[in-house]
Image (cartoon, rainbow, N blue to C red; front, top):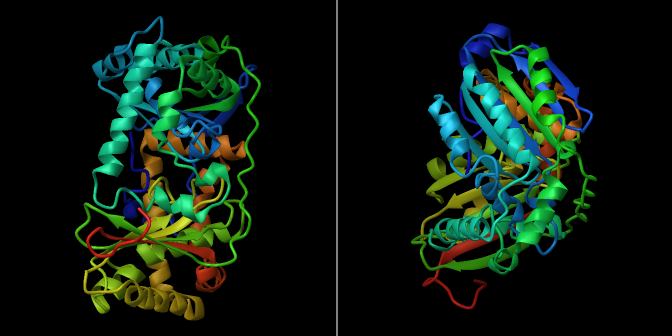
Length: 453
């Protein structure tokens, strides 16, 4: 279950508020006695709401020996409770004209709903109901285990390139278990899961003191706080699970791998550079640098590799891509380039042009015009997301989960606007170097032999 979060453009809004000004809506926050944090952002432009509950459990946080559990549990949360059997959740929200979804990322699992405000109170009741307990049955576990394993077969085993640029690349680029295991889930771990394992996981991570609920829309903050206390206040908290150590030892040399692909017709390259921590002053420059390199046909890499030298068919990528926006991570992540290239081009020929493009950025920096174009696009995308209640709720919920406050959600556009060409140049010179990268060359199976599979 995935949802794009870095998409909508709102250039008119950016122009109307000025390039360096901050746009902020009334937002308040309260923590219930059981530890659940509730964030409310009032927006009376339409009689709708967006709700997001984020739990502090994601791919990198799942226990060792439980690969894929965070994602598996996202599915199990839709299997119903003893009070609200499977299907009730969907019927209530969809019957009221709304929709719901869930997704798992490195540092959180979120559940989102949107609809007319008349559906908000029933949705809060239902979210509280599945925070209290679930319908723990072998049938439900087997059902969703099979669903997840089928996702792996469809999205990985039976697709050209098998998602190697976001599934295999981190496993090669990082060294510690939290960041380098197969977060989609090894079948042996998924098959070994028991009902007791599921209950234990739920009691550890799906507890109010490990969650943040954000509500955005045509609501009154005090009324939402009262409803949160009414529906969630009696849910007991549990001892918070210790956060695993996610820091990585410094990478000292380039890592290169070759894999064969029985379904791919032409080769592809995945290149990942380790990003600085999100709290680092370099992080915002890294996010903008990644967009300069990858954002559309005007990007530096597309122009160099596809348009000019014609050593590539397509270029995609970005920071924390494709599993989140460039600023929404809470542990090690990568700037990733995913490049599909013709059979008559060698890996070394492609990398020569690629490296030349990065060296130019590291020595000269971008032009002011290039930087302003990308910064305006990033800011307009961010404002566009904040205009959508469900997207704003998601951003607010994640920020509070990571930082304990929501201020960064409203500061990000101004931070982007302040990035300079010199910062981009320095970031590229410091981080976009061979010693900080991992490369996987994925080639059609018939092209070469004796390589990793």
